[in-house]
Image (cartoon, rainbow, N blue to C red; front, side, top):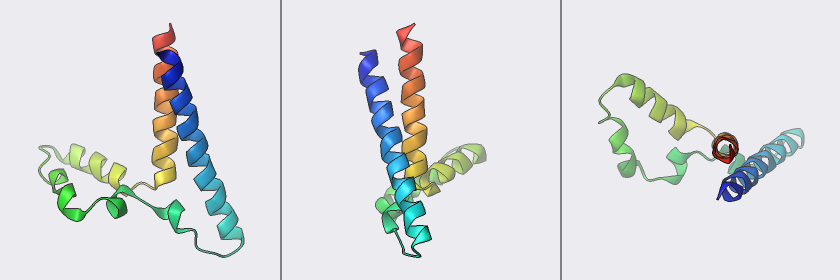
Length: 92
């Protein structure tokens, strides 16, 4: 069970780094790599994100906005690190 979390964490980190490297290469070549600029806000229809305004505390709304507006590569790397740490904790 722990191996699955660690493996998926590694896969997510590699995918996030892959997007980040391609974004850097596109920047050097002065090209636009649109996949690196994807956010959850761009991938999810606006009517499905109305729950953010209904959150009871402003701190939660700010945190949800930060997650929704974060680039995809950041989300992949953070989720990968989270799964790696979770797999390491559950191993002990």
